[in-house]
Length: 200
Length: 200
DNA sequence: CGGGTCTTTGAAATAGATCAAAGGAAGTGG
DNA sequence: CCACTTCCTTTGATCTATTTCAAAGACCCG
Image 1 (cartoon, rainbow over the protein chains, first blue to last red):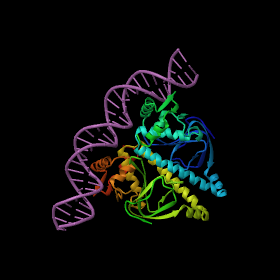
Image 2: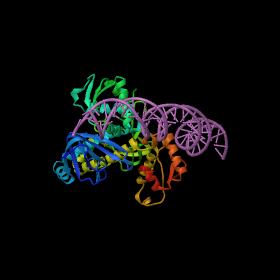
Image 3: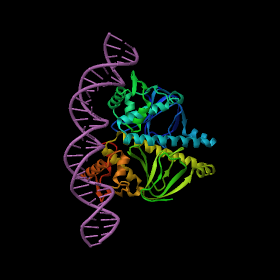
Image 4: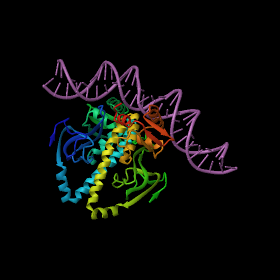
């Protein structure tokens, strides 16, 4: 199943018939308030599961971030699979547990961190997404942000203006460098990490 | 295992050896930032599982809210149980999924809702915790808050002062009534519900 | 090269935090 | 049974981080 950029393929609250695995590209998950306020609850990419937070209906909407390729597993087939391979059930629980742990951190971010701390945490998350060898002890790390500022803002519970201002401040302070909107270089990973934890 | 009021029995980040089920009383789960800021990630009560958000180490701390009684299941025994009763594994995943769905809503609350909306949502959550017959279509609902304002604040990502002010405002507006700190009567459930969804 | 979209920057407004103090409830000991 | 203390909550006044409103700049793509 190939989903073009920006196309929504899970409607929040709709009956949850399928499981998804992201094969290629990226996806954003979100919930909406009636007046349009949006909270992005996570980004998923190659290898990630989608649909664990769903019993009878989906607790979130989902939309492709760039062109995305997904595998769709109707719940019925999933059932057949877990019947045949009982380990899969365990694996799914593990996955759900991991997600749950991430959620705890995200609650703390949204409930208790300042805008600077949120952005710093976000940048650290992006670093940890990179293949490990790239950055272990590196004095600088480089990567591209695949999502627009709007998405970063809705992920961090901020406005795009605040996101932009904080990133500009980080740049001004020599903590990061920005080239052409998407390309980020973390100049001082240690300090960004410290800010993320609320240590400065 | 009986835990006295206020006693912490899970240390955030400590190795996760056990599963817990709350048998009686209540428990609060939370994460901390180094400088002491706290986010309560959930309250658990009779029947609730604890420790799903844990792989090798706990992603949260836990503390009794009043005297609480718990069953402790070392992971090894749990393993034996799931081996013997494969359905349990499925049950645990279901539980994790349910938690995950709740988390999505909580992210939206912390990331996008106003203080009024947060308190209204919190009150609605408490209503839904009551046994169903008590309030279906009831024009008023009554209950006791088992936690102090500090906990409500840390759960909603606010300060105690804001919690207090918003509750006073609700009271002034005739939406709720408060007797002696803990006892709450929801006078206009419909309107509280509307506020919770951001509709006024 | 021009129009549209996204981002950055600036100025003003505001929701909620912080600081400060008063009010209430609950327990303690005389 | 009543001061007295302590802790928690409420209320008030002020402050500030972030939002909102507004406009200018950058980037993209036909």
